[in-house]
Length: 279
Image 1 (cartoon, one colour):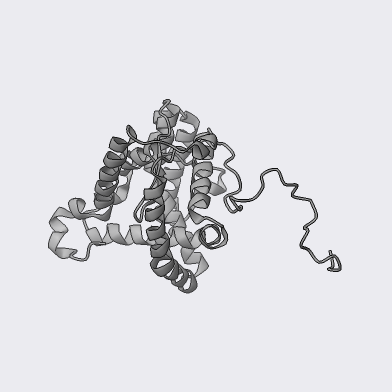
Image 2 (image 1 turned 30 degrees about the horizontal axis):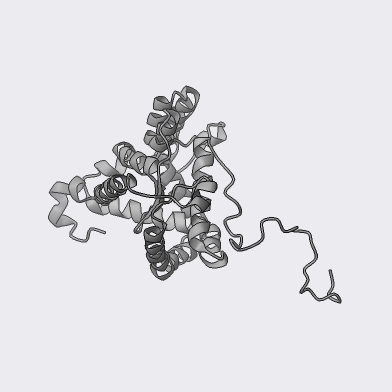
């Protein structure tokens, strides 16, 4: 993302990919929030509990993101998966999770989840001291499993509404609450304070490849197997996010046909099926 590493080494934080992502997200949030007042949600989306008044724009961005994934990210993630040994990937995953622990801890405290905050602090201490700086995970062997937290969830605990849904170029789906939370969470990311930009960029690229490779089945199903990949991704994201913050709702099967009869009996005999075919 930043190729002129040495030239800007003295101002690493300013030109780090984390800071650039923060600026992009902040600008997009300002635009989205400013437009909210004059936006009109469709009755169909409202009936499903979805606030997506800019669906037409979001669909254009979704098409761009889908193309970027299929042409760039997916092939790179497949190559990463093919050449990286399982043991190395496990350590990479551990390390990436370890970098999230300061964020998790801060948000557990802010949310009043003191038990989870204690577990997270112990994980941070044990894995740093006994787990090769977080590449290993001895804390889980003691029952101290990861307790995820972020500022978007903290805002939900504080009573903030979800806000409208939108999709950002390259950054993917979000809501106003989650997007604002991601900005605040950057303050707790150790990669933001790495003085050498190449290190920060390497961590972020590795995180993107590891995430895409780990979730290859789900992402490929949404993009390639669903009738409408936009609604499928939106449903998948909102259900996952609402489940995480604790106010989930059923938005339907994200891979289903949106034109199918909702009252049809799923066990009814297919009128086009071959009656002589083996059951």
